[in-house]
Image (tube, rainbow over all chains, first blue to last red; front, side):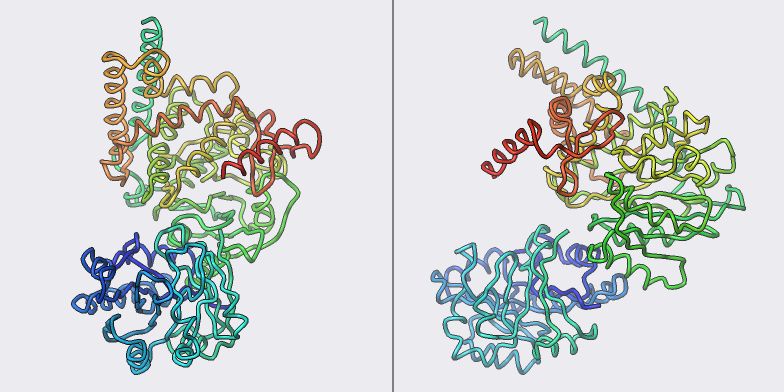
Length: 230
Length: 404
């Protein structure tokens, strides 16, 4: 049976509305096999980012270790109770007023803190150094214009070589450009609220461990997407 | 002023009935709830039981609900998860439970059975056919039970005159306003009415979330096949058992109905559907439900006459009484709801008061994308595809789509 996965989940550690433990239970009770918790790490080099830090809507360097350790603790509970693999991650969020300058990047299986105000190259190289999976999130126009983050797509010639996979679907949006370019793909919920559980998901045909999951996505074989509905 | 006195009198009557409901719950409850009690005082030999679990979609807390049945302390039982489709998301949960407990007697039946109009009965039929034991327990997938649940209910079956054992349900969980309303309603009106009818009127008020029967008794009243087109199959089975001279017992073992993430719409839809059932089954008795909603009745003078000091004060006093009463019931049944949520109880009662009128205006339900007409005793029939009926729904759907 293919693994039902969601690699883009937010909790109350950033701007999600559900606590980490309840999030784990929600996905576990729904039968998921693999999830990644990916709270925002927002750039603090402009007023938008400063606000996010002011209102604690971002993981910061000083609470990163606590964040990762909480996820690891919950991961043990999840594998024991639900047989669900939980992978720690972050969503590097480079937010600007212009959606053409903004970009969001999932770093899955991250070990050390990476600031969002670093340059793209530095972020990608450091992520590679940590053997984290790099995913470009909602890379094209979405139904919610305010969420558009188009920088990576518009600069794909420069950055595609660093990116392991692109979100071909995010929550209710599908980005057919990813398919046309034949980029490696996954689909995620961008979970912030309980109702986001029912959204696009990834199915993987691989073993249920972190390395196999990362390799499966990187090689993009045995990957499918599904619209998870009740 | 006459309006005020008229509704004050009805409200007082409603409060008296409410007091009797509280009394019924008080009398029904053992000093300590069986879910926390050691099973030592229970008989040592128990009949083997087949647990049938009709499943469709993801209920809140589904994994834990199903697991609670696997963890039951009982000598011999099998669990049959009944699904119509392997692509149902609940199939994965059932498989995980089966894989997690390979030593337990768990089967998953996925067979499409479409002979009836009641989807729950359709789900049950293939599982019922392969059930190994004479005693069958039909149990919904949205309930969670304690360790000694089967021992408690099976003990009643030692009396051969008992045909069916059912349980009272307690709402649990609640992270959204819809689920809080649902749990408040289960823990006040539903539990109160069931205990009240059982204690004072000896009426068989069967709740489909837990029904223990013998196959022979069920077959004697027509079997599952005879209720395949009935919406309230649980109530009708109980009623037929009662008419066949078999006792219907309301066990005092509380089972939890976990509702975590309901929206308001789901809460309203469920109680509209349940209201339609009760209206079609109970007829004129359905009007007593409105009288038994003192918060709604006490608020009507404000709407129908005028908001004055006396009408508003009266509604407030009744609301406070209701909050205290619901809190007491919650305490009595061991509810885990946050005490502050009981402050929402009057708002829930007001909503339920307005929902009460819908069944009188409409006798159709939409179930799994199909629209059915509810007839006498909640018998379902398909909505006509042509004629006045179809036009009525086309217009209704068009308005709804436009509003959406």
